[in-house]
Image (cartoon, rainbow, N blue to C red; front, side, top):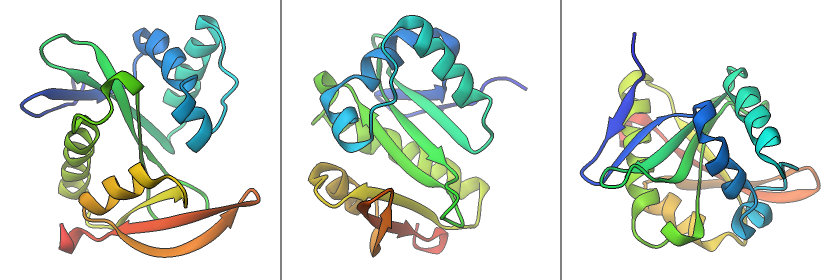
Amino acid sequence: MGVKILRSQRLYVKELALDDAPFILDLLNTSGFLEFIGDRGVRSLEEAKAFCVKLRDNPAIHYQVVFLHSTHIPLGIISLVQRDYLPQPDIGFAFLPLHEGMGYAYEAAKLVLDDYFACHKAPIFATTMENNVRSISLLFRLGLTFERSLERDQQILHLYKKDPWNH
């Protein structure tokens, strides 16, 4: 079976590959990633390659890279992560600052959500820091609704949910 690629008019989304390591190195060190997702300690290309392998080898983590059709340049990632404190996966997203504010995150996340709901008749969750206004806005736009606040690692997070029947 080949690699599954999700496509929209402007974008395509595919599973993280080792070739994506230079992009991952850049993404993980952006101010937005560091502030809202966390420092992964990846500072070199070798560490980025090891990080990609670690992600790919973990069945609970699915990173998909978002590319622009016209240039084949990676713009960001959409992740589906099965967290130990949630019954279903958590969708996440991160984009390089140059590509923010153009609707790419919504377009790519919608592709991934549509694919998820086509394959699973189960809810999807999202968690974010309460001050991550842009992500919260995107979650609402994608149809997720606020469930509750929760504490993880001495931090208050907001939990959002979308059910397949409200898709």
